[in-house]
Amino acid sequence: MAILNIEKYGSKVLRQKSKNVDTITKDIKLLIKDMLETLYFTKGVGLAAPQVGQLLRICTIDISRDQKTPIFMINPIIFMKEDKKFFEGEGCLSIPGFHEKVPRFDKISAEYTGLDGHKKKIFTQGFLAEAIHHEIDHLDGKLFIDYLPDFKRKAIEKEIKRKKKAGDW
Image (cartoon, rainbow, N blue to C red; front, side, top):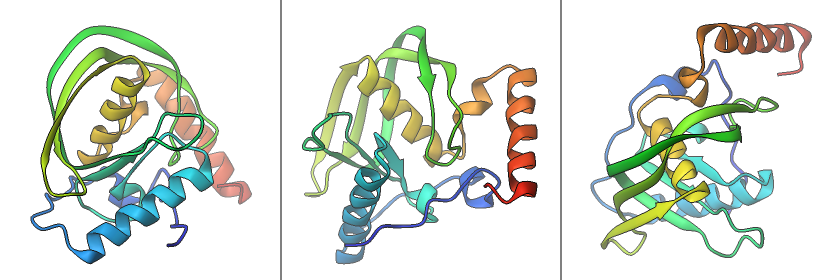
């Protein structure tokens, strides 16, 4: 297993739509394991394949503090959303150092293929719903800052440009 490089804001791969995974091969399983190791190494709660440069509909999520309850989602889709609300301080491994309130649905239902190749459904709410929604957005080329008012998004983009110029990005 390996720690993968995380694509940061400005990378074109983060704005592209990911392709479905047709077959769960050894390479796909290795990618998922590497993604999980990278997720744990960075102390994140979710990581989507585009964030590691792979345009595949794959994400790993683990909101537990003990890093013992990972969820591996292949070709996930959200088929039900309800009770929109704002969650505090959403951040992203691809936009490090920035956290903002983002509107998300408190309750979602999603369908995905598990690492074992079987279809699964999850009905959840709260932080896990937020994390799933965030990661599926990545698979569609969308970032959490896209939900922000223009003035906030532009301020973040300006700060990122400053950091890039200073070599801090």
